[in-house]
Amino acid sequence: MKKLLFTFFAIAALAAFTVAGAQINTPAPSPFCKMEQKVGLTDVTLEYSRPSMRGRKLFVDVESFGKIWRTGANASTKITFSDDVKLEGHNIPAGTYAIYTIPDPSTWTVMIYKDLTIGGNISKYDEANELVRFKVARKRLSEPVETFTINIGNFAANTAEIALQWGEYHVPIKLEVNYDDKVVKDIERTMAGPSRSEYYTAANYYFNSGRDLNQALAWAKKANEMGERYWQLRLQAKIEAKMGKYKEAIATANRSSAVAKEAGNEDYKKGNDKYIADWSAKMR
Image (cartoon, rainbow, N blue to C red):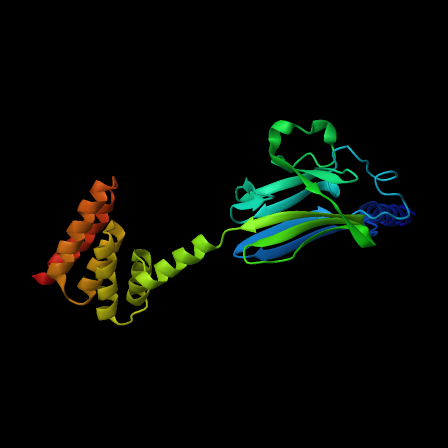
């Protein structure tokens, strides 16, 4: 009897635990959307939740004219720029911001906001956290949009349009990017040839993978010609020693120690001293 009671209570407890731990998933009323778009060479990422009208009159039954709106639903609507950009001529540093708006029948006020945490808790909205605020004339859509949408389109050479669309409202925000500086820098870097760090990386790979040591040494020397670094000099010394050039290796290792000392890393000399002692013994 005791065994039956124990079994009964065990099954009941398991059933209760299963029910308590179960989750019922239903569609979100305002589904989350994340979109990524390349504008020029700048990555733009949007994260927001999308409310729908569902038969309600926009800015009468749902949201209101003249009041701050989170420009979406649920958490703050966020926009991220990988580079500095301009919105309606205003400078926006690279980073992530919240978008808040004040809808109006003819002109919307757009606020780029630095605090990402308040969501729809407008009572905590603080103008001190605004990066910029500007006005945008709204346009009218020929066909109403049931679900709030933010699009990025109308691409030109260095511009695009971030469009807020809901109901008959279309609010275009001009986005400007600067890719020319990036392109020019890439051209200059490419035409100038490999950088110091690239020569070092190539030499280090050839040395560690047992490839052409003559080529590895040439690259290591080139890296140090472009700017001595104590770790680069140690690599050059190790390549020289592996090639049997112990005299050169010792001289290069001593130079590595001197450069390390100048950089405030005197402990680096201890490692070099061990190599030098080993190479000196091989010369006897």
